[in-house]
Length: 210
Image (cartoon, rainbow, N blue to C red; front, side, top):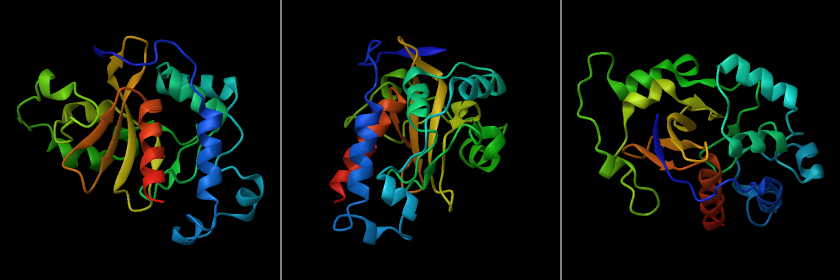
């Protein structure tokens, strides 16, 4: 596996604070509810929470056994905080609960062939100098499609145009997997050193949309 650095170095992730702010702002009718295709369910509005109860340790253990891998810490802590989630932005309908998470090659094989061109694809490999760039300087076209069959699908959108993926082919020094936001309007994917980094950026994009 290839490696890069993360900014977190073992600190815990403040998921509850982030997700509660996100819920409160999504559910503010002046700011957002009128922009959603359908109103949030009554129970979501009453609870002021777009997620669910956290997954149990047993549920996470069963998921990791099914996948044959240990999940990265920021993603595990997210699932322990909320086992799934409704909209992050208008492009992502749901973050999947543990029961629905799976490898992209199993859940969406057309996504794989659409980007890789099939087994005979011979496109040149993106160099490390282009690939290992995160933040504003990143070129979203600097994608390595050969990683796609190994990625984990963790979100669902009805029209299948936008998706969050976790990439175990690139792992940080503290065990985080690279996270991708793959969208139909991008030439490739916006990539992050971890799921935590992806979600923080998605939250900022959501707030900018207000």
